[in-house]
Image (cartoon, rainbow, N blue to C red; front, side, top):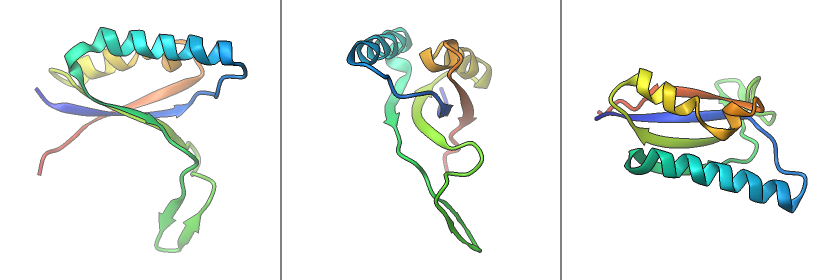
Length: 104
C-alpha cells in the first residue's frame, strides 16, 4: 500500500481553550478513524519561507502550508476520501492537498 502526504492549507488557531479542546478532540477522532493508515500524524507548522534562485520570501507564498500528515491508502482516490473527512476540511476553514510519496 502506498503512502500519501496530506499538506494542509488554511485553518485557524483556536480563540479559546475550549475551542482548542474541541479541535483536538475532532483531530483525535479523525486519527482514530484512520487507525493503522496513519504513518506519521504530522503536526501544524509555523510560517514558511519560500526559497527560489532569486532569494528568500518571508510570506509563505500565495497559499502557505499550515501542517501535514502522512497516511497509507490503497490509491490516491482513497487518500483523498480520507482527507475529505479531516476536521479542518469538513469545517471549511482549510483545504488538504494529497500527493503520493514516490519511493526512490
